Image 1: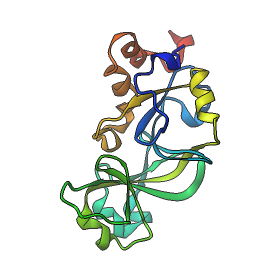
Image 2: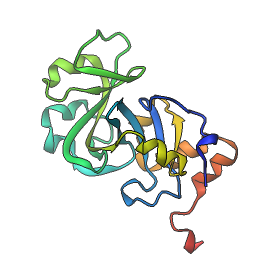
Image 3: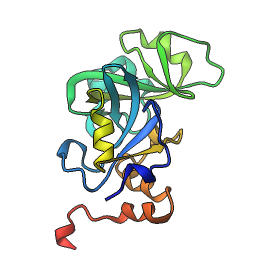
Image 4: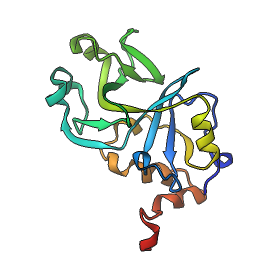
Length: 194
């Protein structure tokens, strides 16, 4: 079991942090997931799962946004809450002007207002991803789950939300932690088969 005490990115706000599921997490909605926090208010924490690409093309659902979607240009399962809702996560150009269509999360990473016209937002972005649904925790719930060893909190790297191999992100994040934490990357999906 991994404890909160070994988590190198302890923070008051989870916005911009990676929440990485430990092998002890028993919820199938979050098995081997990497979640980035995109909101932390008095009513709880909101994040999107970064490593669950679907086969559904962005063009089929949000045609106007498809040209901005990075590779793979598919929808990602952002989490089990409101699976019909769409959340855009974008990478802002370094010289882009301020816009209320972009809400910063971490550096040049932020959420996008998908109700805007894509032509209005396109000049601001170098890339984006679209997530269906999100992960949400009531006040204190995530902190309790972290204390129970279900999640580790790590610093995000700029490339994490736009990995071209999202299925490998969970193990990549563990490996780069170094030391004993890097061994978690090799933890078998089903330990009984080991």
